[in-house]
Amino acid sequence: MKVAIITDTHYGARKNSKLFHDYFKKFYDNVFFPTIDNEGIKTIIHMGDAFDSRKGIDFSALSWAKNNIFDPIKERGIVLHLIVGNHDSYYKNTNEVNAVDLLLREYDNVTVYSEPIEVKLDKLNVLFIPWINQENEENTLKMIQKSSSKCVMGHLELQGFRVNKQLVMEHGLESKVFDKFKLVFSGHYHTRSDNGTVFYLGNPYEMFWNDVNDERGFHIFDTETLEKTAINNPYRLFYNIYYEDTNYQTFNTEEYENKIVRVIVRKKTDIKKFEKFIDKLYTSNIAEFKIIENFAVQELEDFEAFESEDTLSILNRYIEEAEINLDKSIVQKMIQEIYQEACELV
Image (cartoon, rainbow, N blue to C red; front, side, top):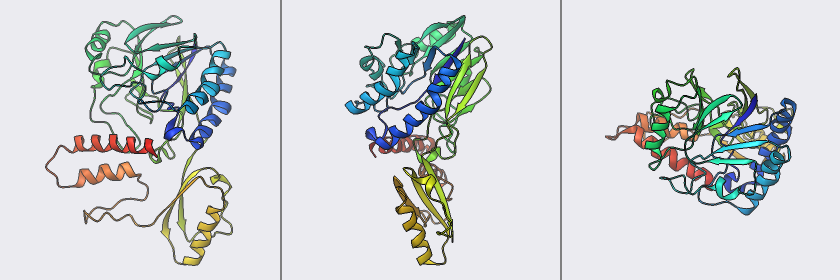
C-alpha cells in the first residue's frame, strides 16, 4: 500500500498571511492533490505541526485550512493520521490540549495521536510518536523499547540532524535510541537530513530565508517495500538577486511577482543605474523587498558575514566566534527559539 507523508504544514503561518497561504495553495492544488489522485492514495500521515501557532488560531486561517486541505481530503475518502507536533500543543509540558484535536473533531476520517501508539498501515506496524515532553517522555521511551514495529513516524527532536542548511541540532534525544528500527521518519526540522536510518523528511514549502534553494515537498511511502519517494515542490517564495552592475534594461523581473526578494549588492559603480534597477523591481509587484549592501557587525572587528548567509546563520556563527564564558550551544538554541518566535510575529 502506498501512503503519503507530509509534515510541518504550519497553516496560519505569519499571522495568517495571504501571501503565504496563496503560496501554500499553489503547492496543494498543483502538486500534492494531483499526485495523491494519480497514485490512488487513500491514506495520509501528517507528522506534526499542522497549524502554526500553539497559542491560538485565526478564524480565517482555520477556514482556509478546512476549505483547501481537510475538506478535499475528506471528499476523496482519504484517511488522515495526524501526529501532534510542538506547534500543535498549547502547553510545552503536555500534548493534552492541542489544536488538531480541538479543531478537527468534525472530520470522522481524521485520527489525532497525542500519545505514542502502534498503528497498522495495511500489513505494516508503525510506531507513531508525537512531540515528546515532560509528561509523556517516560511512557514514550518505554514504548520505543518494547515496540516490535519496523518503522517509526513522529515529531522528534534528535541530536546531529540539520534544523536548516546551516545549523545542526546539538540538543534533544540521541538517535541511537532508535537503532532497533529499520526506518524512522520525522517532522520538526524543516530541511531534509538523514543518517541512513533516521530521515527528517522536511516541510512542503519555503517559510523563512534560510529555506532558499532548499528542496521542499512531501513523500510517497510504500508499506510493502519500505521505499520512499520524494515529490518535490517546484514553487519558490524567497529569492536572492545578486547585483553586479546588472543591466536593468535587460533584467527580467517577471519571476519575482508576489515573491519575497532581497537584492545583495556585489558591485555598484553607477548609482543612477542601480536606482533604475531598483525602481524596476519596485514596479514589478514584489511582495516584500530588501537591499543588502553592508554586512559589517560592529561589535566584533574580525567577524565578517557572508552574503550567502541568512540572519540565523550569521547570529549562530557570531556566537560561535565570540569570546564569551558561556555554553555557546545553549545560547544558540535560545537565539534560534527567539528568532523563530519573532518570525511568527511578522
